Image (cartoon, rainbow, N blue to C red; front, side, top):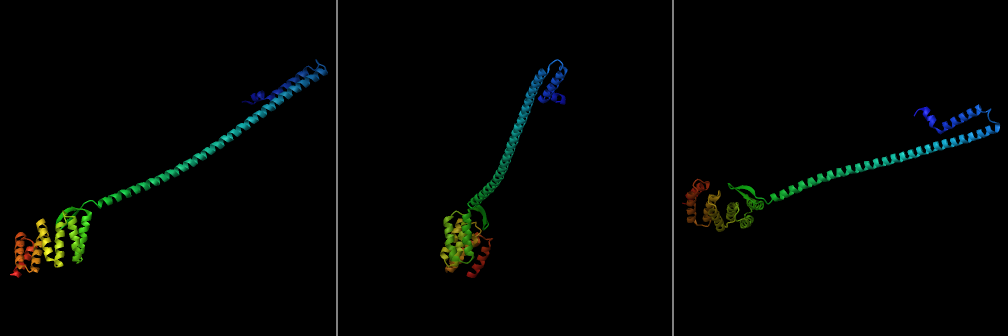
Length: 266
């Protein structure tokens, strides 16, 4: 708004204008009125000026009051907005912290799940059949079956033949159809031979031959039967057994040993 317009609209300036007009009119008409009338006119004009001044002051005060109220309202709004911003910042920080914690928890759960799955797999593998190769044969064996056979064989190889025998007997009882059965019979017979239990040794060697005549240890088992018969002073039976060995397994190392043994028995 321009200065001219502002002065025209302001009550104070309007009052001054009225005073100026009144004074001008009084001066122009001084000759037309007597002193009493002039005084009345001046008093009336002063009253009007005072009214206008009071109105102007009141308007100014009201404007200032409104401005103050508006400023106070604005300050309150700004303070409230600032509080809201701080609250939002706090909530965001809290959410970030929760998100980080959730990420850590998720990572921990994934590691735990992986460990659990690995543990279950490991436990399952303890019960799953495994492929083994013994005395030229490949077959599937249960982990416990493999473990027990190897434990008995380890005792035998230490030279504790008496302790090895019940282990092989128990193994054959529990795993009668095992792929280890032929080998278990062979080592059981050898353990019995070492403890001079020749009759039982012959029984187990013959069980191996009857069960698996093509077993890698079958030729050695026939030769061992002959050795047991020699120890039992049954030379005739030993010679027959050696002859049978040479006929049944002519290309084996046991057959060559049988020929030497026959030559010494004659």
